[in-house]
Image (cartoon, rainbow, N blue to C red; front, top):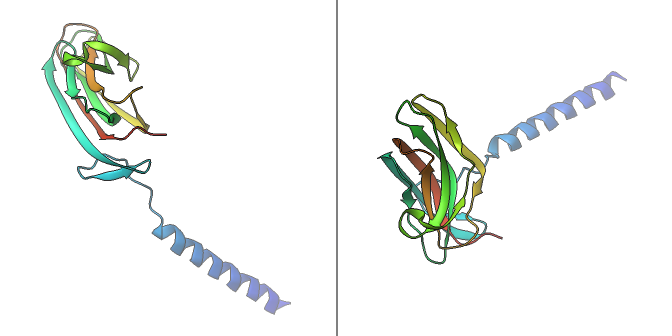
Length: 157
């Protein structure tokens, strides 16, 4: 009887060891925003980082790329003055997304204080169509800044 218990204990130890070895080799896939060509949804994509600094109107952050989609993975938006306003990431065509504008995010609310809001999208945000630029739109003509990361690639499934 003691032998059977010892065998169970040894088998459990071997199984636990094997599981730990397996788990130590599994690594989660990184978010696509390192500055190197990568693959997303089976297509080659090119990461980007764009910045807008101290602006008061809608500004283009990532220019449109004909035939490709611009996916947004993360970023940070900042209210540079002590005036309440909202900021949102939008897509569109024309100068500073002046035509065909559509929201990618809801408005991020800033109270009457200077502040930063990090944004992280576990599923990359994507525009409704290919060939659209990515812009940031303020609700008031007060100073804001933004850094947006993402990648440009073929339309997903």
